[in-house]
Image (cartoon, rainbow, N blue to C red):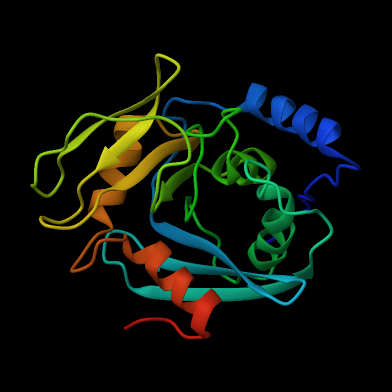
Length: 222
């Protein structure tokens, strides 16, 4: 995949916040994409002082694995909650650049608009690559939601400061929900539909489940 996107490197938190505000202003929160034939899962692990990013491309809707890439980058930004994109996104961009089959959609193991400044990693990557992107996180970063029915596909809005920033989505009965939010060029309702379409036997959608296995264990689940 050809991409010249480079993640900005802030000198301090003030600059980081300003970059997040600039990216947030460019987020498109409605559907603005063509046919979706490939979906990439994105996740990042750590090895010492390096970020290890994994991207796995699956055919959609069959979810057959088509391509994958791993990239390692030395971390140059301190650990600060709410600013993890500055540690992880540079390695993800390297991995995306080395793909042979480009994705039509990114599903990130992380948040999009469900973020203190409405700019999680799904927003960062979506805006910098101009790819439709979705955040699908395992836990809440900001906000709260009402109790959720115990049925596949049930969801309820995730609210923060009286604004809907995402959704708690039940992907399987009897398991904890995942937290879906807009990254870029995808509406929340469409993001929910894509995530549930990518779920098979497990709690997590197959693209991010595969990326997590590759980043954490060096293998792609079958």
